[in-house]
Length: 308
Image 1 (cartoon, rainbow, N blue to C red):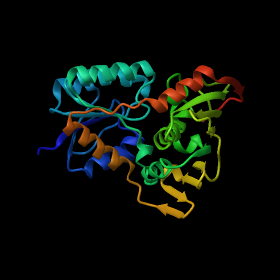
Image 2 (spheres, rainbow, N blue to C red):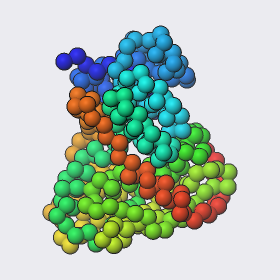
Image 3 (spheres, one colour):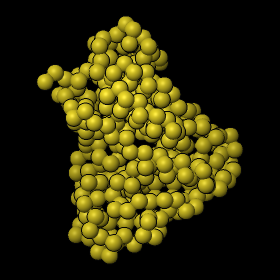
Image 4 (cartoon, rainbow, N blue to C red):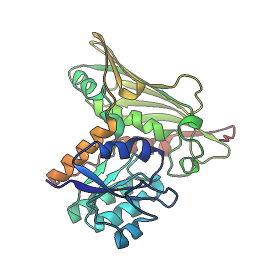
């Protein structure tokens, strides 16, 4: 079977650190082109300043991976889908819920695969955590997702703009795990969003969720963390405590800890290939819906200005 010819659109840090190595390591794909107005691309691979230029003058491609900021992703996705391409959406899948719904409808209409890629769901501990929790009564959940924005998103102004999500850009990773591992749906009760005086998106958030059985879920997000970084989810159950740490890479059960190799992005591309071969899409918007609820219902507090 011929490999799927894929173009990476948006060649920034995440594309170079994760997408390009994952594509190179998967025989189901061949990197046909890259697209970026600012990056020079990959040596020996056709490079273009825009998706328009790729479509008009570049090599034939079967699929695109959109690694751009979410605010511009909808138009690119529609353009690709209208050309019959399959589309991989880096998280979050769009700047709004309505965009995601519209893209799902478009993909179904044209018969292309659309994949909303929640990479943290492919962390090593997530699948076994989901299986273990399926047979347990959830009593409470605590999420602590604290990191230093200057380390992980230096100079990325788009992330502070409307649609950039602010601290929910990493926080949505925790929500993608939460909505995947808990056996019941989750909804928001209250939220407090701390927004720097010179920014449009929050730098921290304190949120109370619960599941449909009433189990309380507390989420602590902060982008001002220095020193050790925290990406932890602790679930109290009738059978003891489950903990996912290091973003889901380490699973600790009452019987002990398991730590496996990080295969998040290879897992994503394996999933994308299977979806394409099977003629299916996967566009779960549950994590983005919870973020939208936080912005819709959250109490906003202005805090000191943030400077990179």
